[in-house]
Image 1 (cartoon, rainbow, N blue to C red):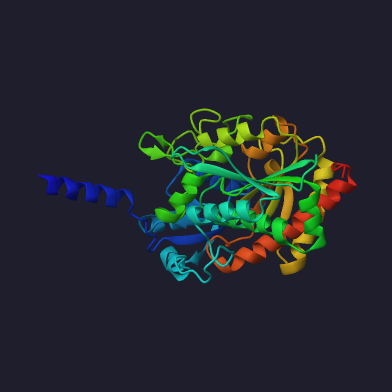
Image 2 (cartoon, helix red, strand yellow):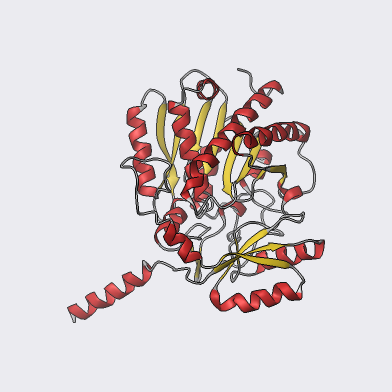
Length: 407
């Protein structure tokens, strides 16, 4: 009997740790060229889990990348044809692409930006920094995830009283380039010899949360590469979209009410331990600029997501953003657009930049939707991070000229 129990346990545990394979899953690049197409795709994105939207539907005629499982390919193509929406296949077999970039092969022995690293390796690296750079880096846990993992943040400060900057990555589990860009930035602030970056490190108190959703991030490494949400159970499904779970104009269009959907907003605002920990951490801190890293889409976004109304200092946002995307394009000619979330995408309720803007009165709040495709091919990690750093340097220069920073 004992043997049988052990075998049963083994089967159950194997089932729990089963890695989802994406054999014969295809990625389609869909080009909506009229408003009805955009409306149709937007409704499709918020009402189905069958088709996985890798990039969000935007207002203008932007291409949208959608992953489709093999058993739904005929249905999907028929659907696009009946709506007269143009499509082409960009990835014929997603699993083959994932196998090609097998991440278990490490080039270096130390942590770096040659490939995407998991949570354990990332946290070990952060802990080593707290020892190596004890004079200016402080490591803290801002709270626990649903599965009881620490949500680690670093504070980089050279002392004295300074204005604070908050930056995070990895709210959406599968958006690995947000995490790699955040860790790259930490490394640069600590070690760069570039005078402009040294100036950033010396002039502000930096709070950086590289993996804001550690359960989801781990799960995207171990089980399901394209997992997006947290991992808290809701009925038969798991997780809420943390970036729809903030207590600001919570729930509305673009926020799914079915727990199985990718954009499920949770049963109530701050239902997720991860967003709650973030909010508790931010409360009482006087933050001047907030930057959150997502992927992908090549856009720099600012508030609001829940309304067409302009944020009060929209002129400043436009000026800072315009210069930032110019600076970003210099090194690799990567073209970003900019605008409010509402203007570029569809309405998005309960997101972190609106909450920081409305509830925390943070004057400057930005989302980077990073360069296309860099979540799959590790060769994009460094260029992606470098160009974002160029944009950030520019943002600080503009914001200083506009009087946001006293130093």
